[in-house]
Figure 1 (spheres, rainbow over the protein chains, first blue to last red):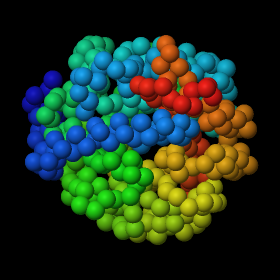
Figure 2: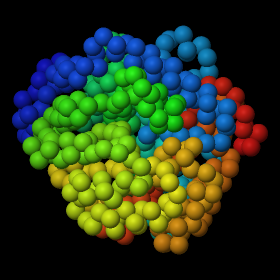
Figure 3: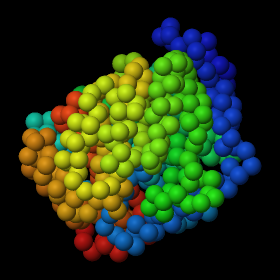
Length: 66
Length: 367
């Protein structure tokens, strides 16, 4: 895994390119990893499964995750 | 997202190749011809990761047989590490793939902030030509952290539920800029940031859903996907400065969808806001009755954007919404995307998704 910020990409462009660690740090700033983030993930897990169960119960209209 | 304990139950996730086997060739032709399926089956062997949805992207025009492929990934799908390692070995000489896999591995790491912010990721491949191996992927990031909760409650925001409020525009600017610099090495231009805020500032039930980075395409366009009520489209396009007569475009959309509901707009924001406008219909299946689906397809056939035979395939699949692989149900669903140049619809595609179900589906006797 890329653990350092890249200065340039292989094609000579991308002077503003960041690596995966910097990306993760940036995403962390949006607040999703603050207290409550775990709850949000739990909510997603249970809501996903409940949604699937609801679609299966209805049995005719299956939606994509989009 | 899903605890290892779930692995003892029938899977929510299967490799793409297995999922695609749930529909026999004769049920797909001429929507998807054998030659397209054979190429996809060959190419997808390199991509063994279990996925939640495998999705054919089919052009609907009578003389356009191009088919692309997409897959919906979840962070806790089984066999992730070994699958990622195998893909990494195969595509080690492609920087787009390396960055994609770095992202997927970081996203899949327990405790990663990426997981809480991005519930699922779409990966899509332009396969509309002969290929020796999978090309650079297009990446679609779901940025609606409360996506499933929102869908479960049919789009109605729930008071006091943070997940129902959606991300702020500042959050999304940070995400969009960071991913742009990560994937493309290019920060969002100030004009793009201003445009993004304009797109997100609109009121009236506009929900940001996805950020997409089309890595394999020239200039690697960045797209924003928003969901909004149909009757808001004209005003919304006007507000964001859409480069075509907004109200006329909205009227053309309403002619295809003469009922109330929502659509989703794929907006290319970088390098610049540009045509065509891509409009997605019926992404939430419960909003589209069988009659509505027929009506939309009939309109597309009348406009020579869909062959009658391809429309018949889609309606037939809607009537038989479950297939099987090794006895496991595989649900079927589809929605339609139409491209508009000015106020003229110029191309239509269907996104046919196939989704493993862990439990028996009551309608299975229809299949």
